[in-house]
Image (cartoon, rainbow over all chains, first blue to last red):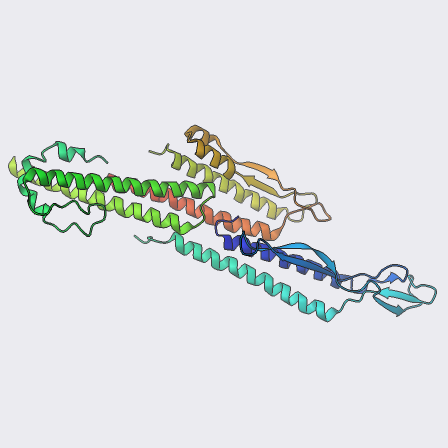
Length: 136
Length: 119
Length: 117
């Protein structure tokens, strides 16, 4: 652990928010990934955050795993010119909502910045402790 | 930082002037508290009481330094949980040292002054 | 004067922290290098054991070891994590300042004791 545990804990928070941002960027990148109707659609990835030793131990947060949020059926879109279209001309698109992804992205960014602000404050507190009795 | 020299050299001949030191209020001073006798006893008693007070002061300085050292080693090996513990202990050791050194220096000065008078 | 357990332990710890800072800089410089595994410096455990033994020679020779992190890698084989490195960097800097303060404090104690007026 770090010398000031607040810094280590904020570090775990920053990591989890970064992984959330990674998942969101993956979702947005694949928002128009078409697949043939015989396969499952691209499913929205979510990150499962879990508190570490809540109440008794070191504290902080970690990623317990990823979950798939949208349905496997996705949206069936009629595109007969698409190379992946089936016999009836349908292609499977992911059922990912861009608006929801954008708002999640803002939350992930703010969470990341908030954790870094904690690190800054903890560092200033530590420096103040080092200066006890100084100036003499 | 041995002050045995003060007791060994001339503490007896200068005892006549030491009663004035004994009547000074030393209660407020941490390491030397409890060193002043009730009233001006015989010169020898006062001299040895002062020597004992100074020795007590040095013992408490050593204790403070040892505590600060222990916390410094903890900081070095990464097992220190609270940084202010070390900083406060270091400051206490520094203040105790400065106080004891100041008392020692003044005592040596007073002694030299008196030796000059007698010589 | 400077060969006691505390002084030597402080010196060894400061060298270890300096090595850790170099490893962090190395990791951050190689954040996009394919196949690069993050470097990690350890010195605290061996220092703690040496201090417990009380042998100054053993403390002086307990240096730092650098190993490669075995955390999961991304597709390009690189496993350097920017948040971990920046937290580690901050932590190392703060520890180093605390140890510098400790060394300075001990020297000023000696200086105070040497004063004669």
